[in-house]
Length: 387
Image 1 (cartoon, rainbow, N blue to C red):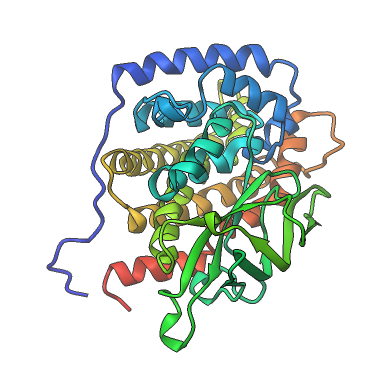
Image 2: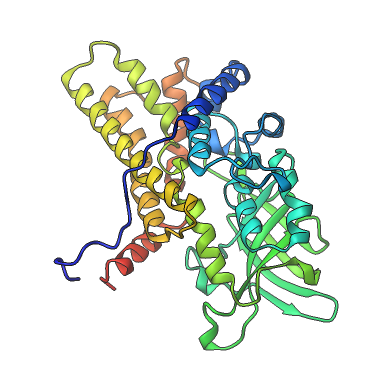
């Protein structure tokens, strides 16, 4: 790497427009009304909390599909307005898992690469908070190396015949659709060029969905097995062989949002409350450092949102935000323990220990979802010319 050359990252300071701050007032009022009775440990689940009733209410109020064309049920607002809504949902601990993947990446991908029939049939239901998606990328023995996926789609006269397995597909057992990456090409030179994306109706015969329990006992991860499944020709998204370019664009949506640094926000709030108005110097320094890191991560993430609004593909910047954000999120439960010496317990009387217990158990997954740390750092190193 030539240190005399400028770094390849395209981060620029971005500010929120007045309409975004006006929308913040609206979403806060909605959340105050809807989340008043939610327990702190439920709020700690945030974007892992599956609540279809809440998603439908959110859709009815116009907070899903914010940037999409009105012709498909959207509201034609800016990416920065959507950003404000997302950070308010996460900061409040709203249960958004039902519609999360569909709103964040599946809908935008269909609008960009899908057929008109796919868009008309599926996207309006997402905007209503009634149609849910799972991600079909990772596979057994592949991890985050998407170029090594082996689930195969074979073209036949009747459609596409699918055989293979997808893994870690969050909420697939409750979703209606999956956007899946399958191998359609042959030969050693087809590692990336032989991949294609498909719109999969998860009610299709031959699809077996097996939930996987996490450390908390919750089931949101899944193994999805395709046993000689027949998809119609119209299930293909975009062009055959263009799946790698499409999934790279999709991952920019997945890796860059405020969920990549706000997953432990509920615990940070309780730490600030426990510190009180006159914290010790040690506690004040720790909270000050976390606040500064949070502010910096938000600026980075806002910059990516601005690039997405401009139609760019900030894959490198998104990988950096996701990696640095996951480190931050995972450190907060340890910091909580170091500062106050409290043993986390889901059965504790105080909310701090219950929230701490939940996030202590789930935080290891923060560096897995959206791409493992090793894969992300490989992407960053390649962007820096180090490999």
